[in-house]
Length: 232
Image (cartoon, rainbow, N blue to C red):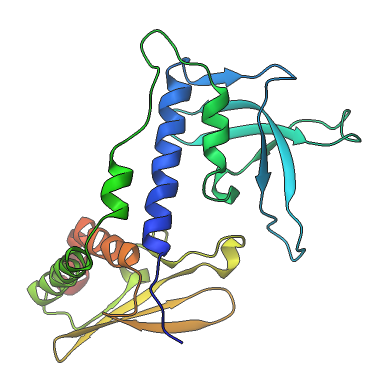
């Protein structure tokens, strides 16, 4: 049964959470180390086939030069006192858990608040606005394809190592679908994507909004390669 796809909103909210965590950590010079008792406990979803989650006490948060967040932590519980610290992927944290980490980081003289008003804008966005964003993205893709007289594009012919994500799997990257090709027929776009086990086609209405925007941006960034392929 068809239903409203909230994934674009969830992904935007997750990105906002991570941006705020980066600001909090960068206010402490790019790394913040908790004491044994002050480290916040958060719940990570499992990335394997089990149905259980794992509680982790965060011991350190850092942001590297590339802007990537690194979380060091230990399993939380009465029998985990001697467990070594491990690195955990912030993308496996359910929506809202990052807030507990930010709550535990003290403010500095220059940074006491990292909140953003954009959260309200996302929640109150009107469907007509979303439709316009989607149409604009489709028009951008069609413009590039028509400019280079292409009605079919293989992603691997443009940049095999940076194919846009079309459908992100929450736990297993092997099941994340990435773009294989774009076709334009009778003014309509079709996007083919695959993971390690299957492939699927998306039309202009079924593809995720964030994926649609990613494809448009990726295609525009690699337009020179498309021109080079046509010349060959």
